[in-house]
Length: 388
Image (cartoon, rainbow, N blue to C red):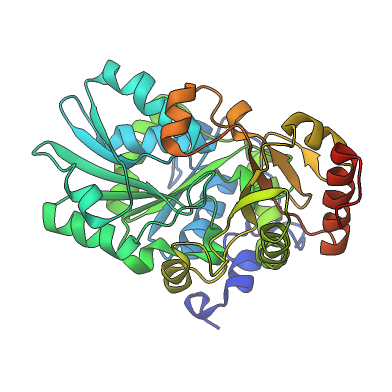
C-alpha cells in the first residue's frame, strides 16, 4: 500500500519511522550523536541543522499529517512561532493578528517586534472586514489561531486564505488547539501550519516541542533562519514525540468526546455563567467550526459565577489538576489571568474578553463521570451546600 493512501492512524503509527536495519526492532532507534561525518556522505548532518535521522524522519510524519510538503521540529512552540514569523517579516514589514491570541505570541509581538522594526495590527473581530481593514501597503503576513486560546473563537480559514491571495500575503496558523486530528488548515488554503507539539502531539505532559509544516519553499526559508537561531530539539525528545504521536488520534478523539459532554454539563450548572466550546450549538461560531473541523477539541473555557472564589474552587478539585499546560491525557485546569495571559495588563485582558473568573479546562481521557463528580464535589465544598 502506498503511504499517500494511508489513513490518519496509520500515518501516526508508521510514517516517519527510522528503520532499525541492524536489529530489526519494532520501534525507531535513537541516534543521539551530536557529531557526524562530513566526508563521503550524502548529507552533512548536525542537530542544529534539523537533519539528524530522528529529526528528519519525524518531520515527514508531521508534514504528512498536515498534507504539506515539508516540516521542521523545534525546541518549543514559541521557538516555532518566533522563527517562522521572523523568517517572513523584516524591517518595515507589517503583520495582522487576531486580538484574541495566545499570551506568548501576543508578548512576542508587542514586546519584541519593535526591536526589529516590524509593525503589527490586531484585528478586533473575526469578520473579513476586521482583517481587510488592517491591511497596509507593507503587510506581508496574516497570522491566525483557531480555535483561539483561551476563548475558543473560530476564524474562517477560507476567508483568510482568499483575502491573503487577493493581496499577495502569506498565511500562518497556530493549529495547536485543534491538532491535525481535528483540523487540516491546508485544506482551506493556509500556507504555514504551526504547533506547540508539547500539547496534543506530545499528549503526556512530559516533553516540550514545536513544529512547523508548509511547502518546500516556505520551510527552506524558515530553515535558513532556524539554523542560525538554534531552536532545534534533542533527538531523545524527538524520539519521545514520535512515540507519543502514534496514539495521538486515539487520545484526541477520546478528549473530544469528553470535552463535549463536559461543556454540556457545565452550561447547565447554575454557578457557571458562560461556557466557551465550539461544539456547543450555542457557540456563535458553531456552524463555521462544523464546516472546517472534524472534531471540536478537548479544550474549553468557562466563567465561574462571581460568588465563587477562583482559587478556592481550584484548590477544592481532587482529580483535575490545576496546571500550567494542556492537552495531556490527564485533565488540567488553570486561570488564564494568572498563567497564559498573566503578562498582559488587566486592560489588555479585558479587551480580549478574559475575565478573572475565566477558567480554561483541558479535558483528558478519564471517565467523564469521574470528572463531573470532581467538579460537583468542588462546587459543594466552596459553597458548603448541595448543588446537585
